[in-house]
Amino acid sequence: MKEFELIKKYFTEQAVKRKDVLIGVGDDCAIVTPSEKQNIAIATDTLVAGVHFPVNTSPRAIGHKAVAVNLSDLAAVGAEPSWVSVAITLPEIDEEWIDEFCKGLFELCEYYNVQVIGGDTTQGPLSITITAQGLVPAGQEMLRTGAKSGDWIYVTGELGDAALALSHILGKETLEQAIFEKVKQRLDYPTPRVLAGQALRNYASSAIDLSDGLMADLSHICGASGLGANIVLEKLPLSDSLVEALGEEKAIETALAGGDDYELLFSVSEDNKVGLETALGHTGVKFTCIGQFNPSEKITTTLNSKPTAINVKGFEHFATND
Image (cartoon, rainbow, N blue to C red; front, side, top):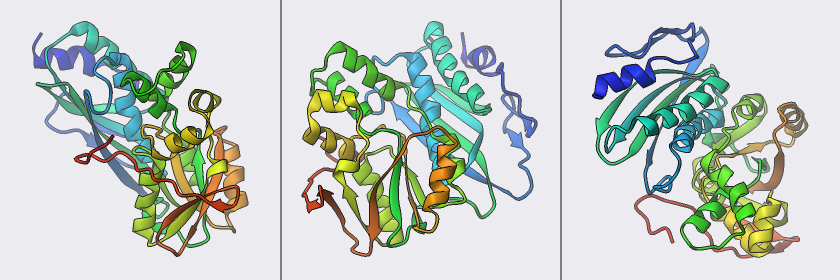
């Protein structure tokens, strides 16, 4: 099978056929027609074998995650995901692998009514690059620059499980099989908080998705907004599996530094707090208030109201990530 046969067999037939797609897969460019008074949000992420997922990860999980991490970026600005382009580099054509990869990719696309509109296939070391585009009402985008001193800091879901699974795979932790299977689901099949992102648009002052770890991603909002923050460690949402495996202290450190959560971290003013909690309550997504922004331009942590020094950092490409 050659390149164009592969594209025709695996990427042209899909369940989602959006009315705003004039030209999709099969031409030099895709052509879409966004609705009036809608801005287009665009996100691109590359996943490289051995960096963003272990080399023995199932192709179905890789397909799911490749889409999920991009939809998570769209969720962070409050966008409704609409279209994706997929560029995949393969060492060789393995039809069984590609079939499973496409199942993971298209399952998530179908769930969120996202159409694959183009991309590219090349030969080389395994990597997947996806560009996702979504629609957000003009002027309602959530940005990293919008936080204000006194705003409350929230996160969705639970933190640290994906990092725990990766630690086990890399031989840094040894987990019971039952715990490993639970946390591995969070690593392989993250849930982009698309509905929660849209619910936040009228209330949140800033937002970011948690890909590199809470402390690292929080620092991006602090830097963009010129603020500091305090995180209340006992408020961090930790799973029972994480605490059972590591104990409370190390579980907290993992939740602060571990990446691959793909939850949302966002801020809200005191005036909008009740409205935000009501709106999020209708989505069925767990959310937790974990701290507050302040003018210090430093990130601090407290435990039971006492200052507690935590020396952790998140993941950063081209840095030493031990």
